[in-house]
Length: 441
Image 1: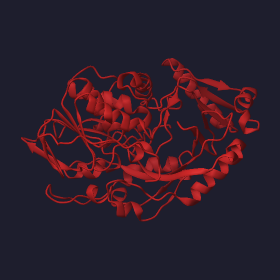
Image 2: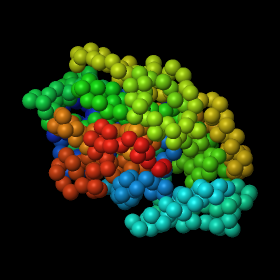
Image 3: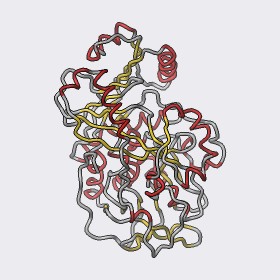
Image 4: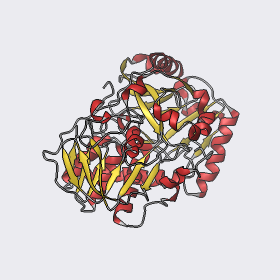
């Protein structure tokens, strides 16, 4: 892996039983296990590779409300409140700061869209400020150019993708749970149609509740149970540069490039929405469901290669519980970055912020961003398999809303009042109701 990542120790022994088994050590799975463990449940988290090693450490680190789709805004707001508490709860820093998120534009239509969103946001108590040309120029003086306008969302922030998820995983262990890396879940055992155990490569854990938070692998796992979960991924490439640039904003988004200060003083550089589409069997299977999404995003997407097909995360294969699975053959999805995009991203960033010329590229990487057809995550119990809860399809938003998503999973498992209305995330909507209702993000 080329992206920075804090590595943690696994729990020594796989338990014979648990109240809940969480499958997947990314942001959704780790926060689900964390909030369950805080409620005194015996929780086991199993991860086929390393905690946080896939998209949860390959993102920008933004924790935002700004420009969220109305269905996701409540969980975004709640997540920010939860991010605020984590350092005190865990005794470790996740790198979270409410530094605000800053957007600049030369496009009148884009500015109008931000202003319209701001009017809606104020009705639900979210603070966001439109910037006129003079204000945008002042706040964006590091660019050395004029702008037609911008927006600033002061209560939003960033966390450190290289350490946030591993830090929370360590807290699960301190809370009495267990974390098992290099331990792939092969499938479930059912009794009377209900979850009765999770079968892993290292043994079976008896449980009545299993949470599937496997990121880009979730749909292929569901297929083993005869469940249809429409999901598809794109390959996004970003890079990091060294410390050395002074007087730059902590965050900046423009149509050309986006920049985020990292915990070490360097910066993450990316082009928003730009990605490669690597064909896979699963993409072909769910092609119809993703037509509206593709129609909305096609200008940012380009054809990819065969790497996605080979990696097996979107396979249509089936396997038995006693055989090696695709998750064991590919422990960590670590696709090759698009070198042309890395070069273009770096070039645009240096043009936008001349101060970055004092830095050098330290890392570049790619990751598979999994999505649902409507761009809204699927969080909820699957009616056909009682005890099986899905938390996947976060569509590039999972890092920021991870705490709220995990809290919601814990609410659903324990029967407590949900932190947000769970209906917009119910996986059942993906049967047909989500057609054409693509998220605005």
